[in-house]
Image (cartoon, rainbow, N blue to C red; front, side, top):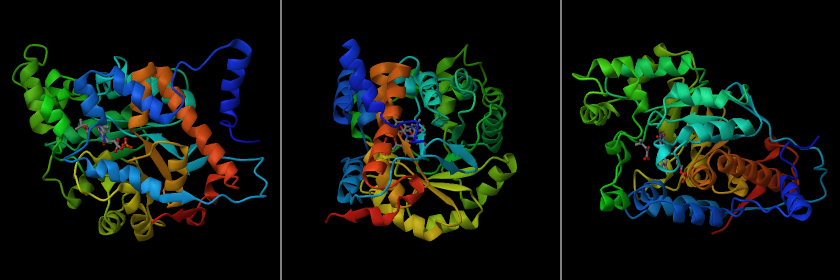
Length: 393
Ligand SMILES: Cc1cc2nc3c(=O)[nH]c(=O)nc-3n(C[C@H](O)[C@H](O)[C@H](O)COP(=O)(O)O)c2cc1C
Ligand SMILES: CC(C)CC(=O)C(=O)O
C-alpha cells in the first residue's frame, strides 16, 4: 500500500479532464501567496507576511532551504511507501503539524475553527495558539466534529501570574490537547516595521484574547467584566500576556501543572537544547518565529543540525520557519527534524479558501512530500537522512 496521499495530483487532472473542473485554489505555492496577499487588507497583510526589522532573518529562512539540495537515488523499489511517524508518543499520518498562529480571524472570519476542521480532515495536528481568536475549547470542538482521532496540541504564551498559566494549561488538558508547546522567543513583540507603519496590532481590536476573556483567573483580576469595559480587559491582557521574567527554573512549575508532554518552541542554540534535555522536556521546536522576532538571527534550518547533534537521541526535535513546499519538509527531515510545522502557507490557504483552503494546502504538502520521497528513491520517512542532501555554497 502506498501512502494515502499518493497520486493526489492525478485526481486534479481527472477532475479537469472528466468534469472540466479546475481547482478553485491556486496550486503553485508562489501563486497561493500572491493571491492571499492580494485579498488581504493592508493591516492583516502586513501582520501575516511581515517580519522583524529589515526582514533579513525572514529571508534567511527561505535562503537556507535553497542552499540544501536533494540528490535523488534511482532503481529502488518505491511502490510501497509510508509517511507515517510517531511523534511524542502519538502516531501521525505524516511528520507534519500546523504551527501555532494567533489571531487567525484577521485573515478569515472562521479563523482557527476553519483550520481545526481542515487539519482534522487530513489527520494533521493543529497547534492552537494561546492568542487565538476563538477559545481553545471551541477550537477543540471544531477539530473533533469530523475526525475524532486527529490529535491537537496547545501553545502556551506563559503569562504573568502562575495561576493564569496553570488555568490555561489545565483547560487545554481538559479539552483534549495532547501536548503543551511553550513559546520562548516572544516575551516581547519584535520590532515589526510593517505593523508599526500602519499602527496595526490585532489585540487592540480585541482579536486574539478569547482565551483570556473566557478564563476565570483572568476575569478575577478585572475590576469590571470585559462585557462592561472591553478596553480595560484589552489593557489587562497586554500587561499579563507574556512574562519576560521566566527562566529555566520555572519549567518545574509547568511540569507540576500537567502530565502532558512539554515542548519548547524557539530553540536555536545547541547549549539551550542541552539545557532543555537536562531539564527533562519532551520536545523542542527549532524556530525563529518565522523571522518575526530577532532580525539578524540565524536562518532556522541552519540551526537545525547543531540542535539535533546536541540532543537528537534524548529529546524529539521538531522544526518550523521557512517551510513552503513538500521538498522543504523533506529537507528538514533530512537534517534531523522528527516533524515539521507549517505556518504562513496554511494562513494563505485559510485566506483564500477557509476550511477548504487549509485542507488543500495540507493535502498538497503531503502529496508533494510523498512524491519527493518516492522520486528520491526512498520508501518511508525514516529512510530520509543527511545523505539525501548536498549543500550548495
Ligand atoms: C501571523 C502569525 C502569527 C503567529 N502567532 C504565533 C503564536 O500565537 N504563537 C506562536 O508560538 N507562534 C506564532 N507564530 C509563529 C509560528 O508558529 C511559526 O513559528 C512561524 O510562522 C514559522 O515561520 P513561517 O510561517 O514563515 O514558516 C506566528 C506567525 C505568524 C506569521
Ligand atoms: C504575539 C502573538 C499573539 C502572535 C505572534 O506570535 C506573532 O505575531 O508572531
